Amino acid sequence: MSWGGFKKSINRAGTTLMQKTGQIEKSDDAQFKEEERKYREFEKHATALQKNAREYLDAIRLMAASQARIGDIAEGFFHDSSETAMAATAYKRAVSELDVQTAKQIDVPYRATVLDPIARLCSYFPEVNKIIEKRSKKLLDYDAARSRHKKLQEKPSDDPSRMPRAEKEYDDARLIFEAIDQQMMTELPHLVDMRIPYLDPSFEMMIRAQVRYAEEGYEQLGGVQRYFPEHIRSDYADGRLDQQVESVLQEMRGLSICGGAAS
Figure 1 (cartoon, rainbow, N blue to C red):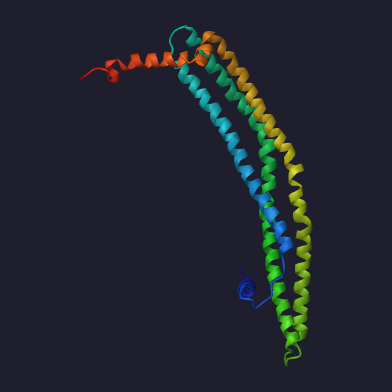
Figure 2 (figure 1 turned 90 degrees about the horizontal axis):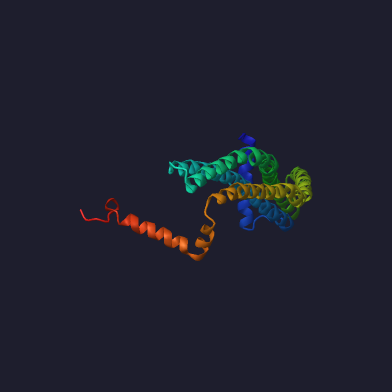
């Protein structure tokens, strides 16, 4: 920071302190504060959307990869040609295809239509925040200059050059602030209003990607069901499948290597 910038920071800190103690009048900034509040809400939601949209894709890719590994492991349990072994092989083939399709059919278009547009939107926030901060500083300068000018009006100085200087400082500060204020009061609401038409296509594509993945998963995994006996579903619905599992577990617990026999 330059020496001039350092001096401005010190002066603005002093102005803020004097406003808090009532020594300098503070401008009524309620209208801008309301627009800033709407913008901050937009910024918060857009940033959260970017984070969670990215995590969604990561989760889909992780799930697809995990399913593929489970398929490899499940197939390794069997060394025969039984229906269950065939089901395990079919499951491995289905989830492997899903893993490949995730990269080819979802990953690339999802990045192009969802992640990239949201990232571009969020990339504007740092610049907008810089302008908001600059406006805040110029408002402090304006309030300070107005206060000095007002005090000289109420109590003229013996130095005749002080009033013209104060008037010029006041006019300059006012013009600079009003210019940036007008820009922000026009553009900030417009930016917030554009959020819906901008994000609508990405939101639609996000839904389409989820639907496509769900349909692909249903189609791929649905084909594995034909390898299971028809009564499996009804056994599961009636609770008989749980009884079968518990029966097998009971047999396992009876084995000495599982702790069923005394040492």
